[in-house]
Every structure is written in structure tokens, then in C-alpha cells.
Length: 204
Image 1: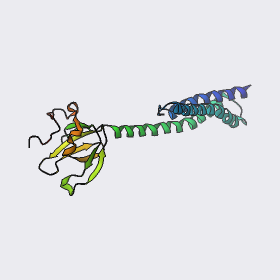
Image 2: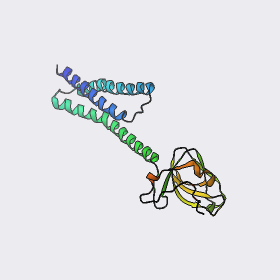
Image 3: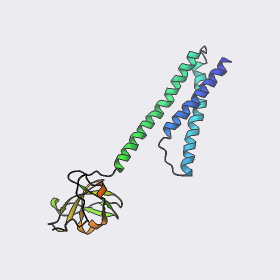
Image 4: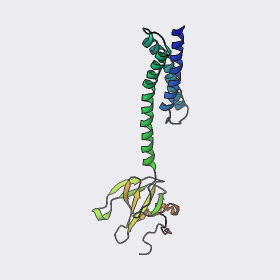
């Protein structure tokens, strides 16, 4: 009778540990329809049922040559829970770190004393190197709906260029593409006088 009760306790502890572990494994699962729901259910099922039968089997094997006591059952359960939950918590910590890294990468740029005015690209725009650094060459493209900050406008050079700080760094945008950007005065550096248009060289 003691043996049966001990195995039952192991199984219930395994079910609970599996349920907790599945929560850690699935905390950052994407919500992408039926296929993802099947995957989530599969992981949940394997973790909980695996814990149920795994704890019962391992607990039985670990105590079969010992006298069954409450202390023994609790000690084996504690060890098994740690073995199951520590990897799950480690996985959760890694995914949480990855989540914050991705969120940081997606965060819009912030204005500073060199880049005061916020804009958003209304279409894809080709970025270039600055004319101060030699012949102008194409750089990375600025995708549609990405925010960029305006720095200096080189109005005395040809072609005229605006220095812009986007998510991937500083690029130079030729005058022909300035009107592809829409101003967002509410996101300018506080205290900055808002631009009236993207005619950055209108006064020159």
C-alpha cells in the first residue's frame, strides 16, 4: 500500500512539475493559428504526461530498495522537480533575453542634440554614403514606415543630402527623396522648433 501511495505521489508531483515546465517552455510561443496551436498542445501534452509517468517510474526505481518514508518520497520528488524545472527555467530565461534583444532592435530611434526632428518613411528610400567621405555610393535602403531622425542638411553640395539616423545607423538621403519622409513633430527632441516641411534647404 505504501508503495502504491508513493508512486501516486510521484505521478502527481510529475504532473504538476510538467505543467509548470510547459508554462516556461511555451511562454513565448507565437500565436499563429491552427498549426502553432497543435505544436503548443503537443509540447504541453508531452511535458505533463511525460512528467506524470516519468516521475512515477523514476521514483519507483529510486526507492525500490529503500524503506518508503515520507522524507524519502519528498526528497526524491524535490530532486526530480529540480531536474525538470531547472532546464525549463533556463530555457525561459534565454527566451526572455532573446525577446528583449529583439524588442530593443525594433525600438524606434530616439532624438538627441545632433538629430532633432523625427520623420517616418512613407515608401522605401535608398540611402547613400555622404559626399564628405568620397564618391557617393548606395548604402542600405530605408524600408517603408521606418522612423528616422534628421541631422544636418548639406545644402551647398550637389547633390544635396540630408544626414539621417535610422534604426540601422546613419545614412545620407538625396534631396530627391526628402519628400518620401513625413514629419512627426510630436516625437522631436523636446523644445525643438518644428520643421514646416521637408524642404530642408528652402531658406538657402
